[in-house]
Image 1 (cartoon, rainbow, N blue to C red):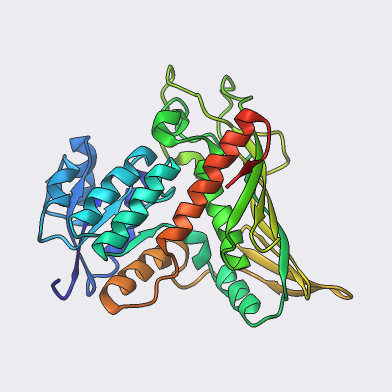
Image 2: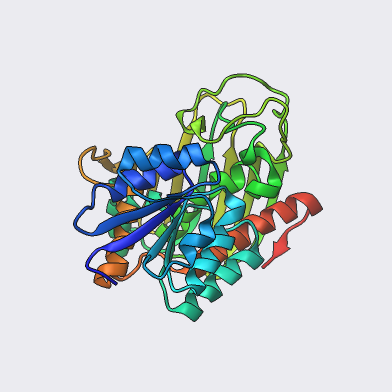
Length: 353
């Protein structure tokens, strides 16, 4: 590998813009050697925007190029595991947008490919890298919460269906609705703060009640994806569930693209034996038994956090040998949970993992 990490970005949609915007801020560490998309106009537009000289339409050309060190994947969900597995087995490091995959079998193959190749596989877990998240993790690691035995998390939107009729709402391409789209974010943050316990059973319900609703989105997070008037909508718009872990802890979840609630919110609540905590829209509060709120951690607006910090961590892992915060087993457990909740919703009973 040269002094700089030679990265190719596959997928020139909304998240491709986010990832490329981070890499161009790292000129001493990263060289963006190519962008790829099946739509030539999209790839060319990003090449011009980010100063990339090479435009490719077939990802296999990049996967099989020995001069490329790492593949960055920002495609629709169903391609994540296909491209990641091929890239890993071709000797490339991989950074992939979430979700890891759309099935447990695919997540397993990604994990096995990473282990076989010895290359780094990381999947976006941007919520770990917000300043409030980092503060709370340190607070927990110092023993200040005691045993975390119960938690609740969710991302609830009032009206925020992304790309309605497009790939987001087409199960064959997305793997599902808000559970797989938003669930990865908050479930991962909760699990990471809880110490990544192993899931052993889940129970869930899923509903599709707004497929015919044409109300415009009031969520800034619904801007991703391209809507199609006569497209497919065969995924849920609300999912709820309950997860049990091997250490006896539990996690209650709720994710919606559309539901009649007051306002959109992202949250994780933790219940510990020494204290409790709430992470809500990046703001952290910590609670004690007697005096209520013990600490109120406002978001720090300066400095790299979120997506940018996550991508920078990947680069440091590959180029500097930094210990990775994310390992493929965590991705496998995530897809296990999501797939089992969908199965539980379909069958109407708890699923053992």
